[in-house]
Amino acid sequence: MKTCIYGAGSLGTILGAYLAKSGFNADLITRNKAHVEALNEKGAHVVGKVDFTVPVRAMVPDEMEDGYDVVFLMTKCLENDATVRFISSHLSDKGIICTCQNGLPEPGIAEIIGEDRTYGCTIGWGATLKGPGVSELTSGEGTLSFSLGRIKGGTDDNLRMLQDILSKMGDAEIDEDFMAARWSKLLINASFSGLSAVTGYTFGGVIDDRKARHIAQNIMKECMDTAHKLGIKLAPMQGHDIEKILGYNGPVKKMISYHIIPVAMKKHRALKASMLQDIEKGKPTEIDAIDGALSQQGRKAGIPTPCTDKTVEIVHMITEGSLKPSPDNLRLYSL
Image 1: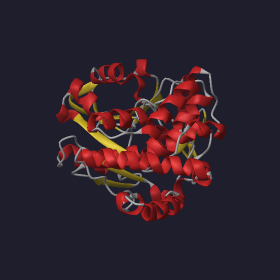
Image 2: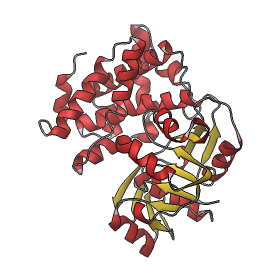
Image 3: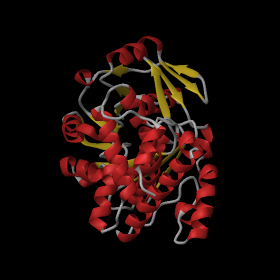
Image 4: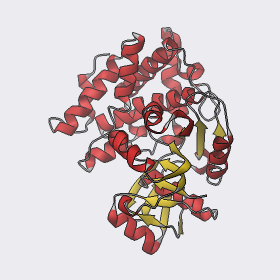
């Protein structure tokens, strides 16, 4: 089986390292030439919650070979149309793409290569690229989980194959109602990743700042209400029913939800949103693919999403240079 990880940045490097450690070969493909050189010369070095180095094979996209049977897509969603068209020219006749991206990328990919060759994966752990060849695992090994599925639900041989590959790193489950898992991931990313970019905080910083936590709670509520209106029940995350423990319809349950958030997010306090990392590097963010996607779905469902909308607006102002990531930006929200 010919496999590659396209977009081997922070997350992709760690996935590739774990696969290589288990004896499974997957090419690591990234535009970052310095990263490619370091990976090939010194191996992939994983630090943080673990510490190991393993030899891998890395290359830039122009060096990508043909005939890949499985491509794990781990780039940002910013140029998905062009990226997927490029990858499709390097797939085998029955090759598939498994997108591990944020937001709701599957429908757009399916328009290019077909729904039967499009698979999705949500990742339950985080990472930060520390330098060429080095990526930090910022979540505990007990959180190394993957949820796999298809747009139309159900399971097939390709999903079982993907499950076997990803199980070499952590707990990989096939979700027959995968889009529900997508929405659960969107709920966390839209609230905590968006606010991390707005404030400059890690997820833990968002939790500890009272106003930031209230805003995150509101964004989660906007996501839940939108999903309900669209007929989607959010999937459990790490065995917990998000809607049951964090959802609310009245002031008492809202207060309980507010105090549960630090417990529910405890394992992810050290996470620094990739959007914030992109801002610090002067790169475009995925705000439109994450919070923007939630806002778009809210309009489709007829559900107001004021906190989500404001997050999109503020992050755009930051990337345009009129604001900087700061807790002071929280004053722009109306609660």
